[in-house]
Length: 289
Image 1 (cartoon, one colour):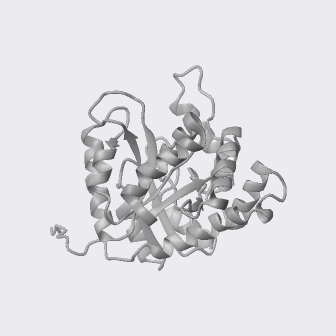
Image 2: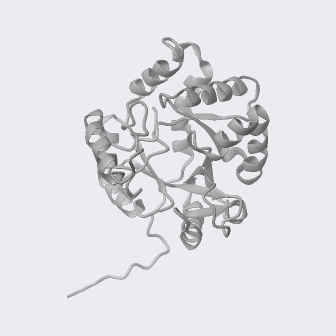
């Protein structure tokens, strides 16, 4: 069963309409068993996801999209993203530390660097993020040599917990990037692909409102253009497969073993994530009138 492993909620301020509780509702509507949040530089949706999942039996997966700069202390905008998931309670503790570091070195957005990732990498699953991610940036700068460089950097930190994202975003750059990763995966078993959608709204019917929402947010920018190509809702597995066909050509999905593996491997990753009590080992203050 396909699991969304890269998903923004309304805690990614100005980027998503999905409340954690709505995410869980949508997962149940689709017959899923796990819900994952990966907000930009923050874990502020974790408690809401945990509480929503606890009522339903859906497994919560806690994650975060991090902006990685070469040196977090330098005030420059150049950074690219990675998606980090907590594999267990140790991983969540390390994500909390990275979120804190990101806020301390905030510059346009929370930022970390490779030194911070290396220090707090235990218990974390790493996904290579979208077309603006750490891996894609290296690919478009240096082709397959860039992929090799990225693999060397990230596998040293995350080992077998490293997965490469392919997405059905309807752009030519996404098509080229997907094709390169799918080709590499045919001959290199170390390149483990996962399919992600990076949803920013819950259903197709929310797309128009989301476009207006972003337009209002960017009203002072005369050059603003709606940045999303193709749908970015919480898709069913069939919709994900159809979206890949729309990007790569009719029938592409059924003829690509690597792409099929990328879809079902999302469930494999979800199964690897351990279930744990979010409040275990913590003391939460109570208030009595």
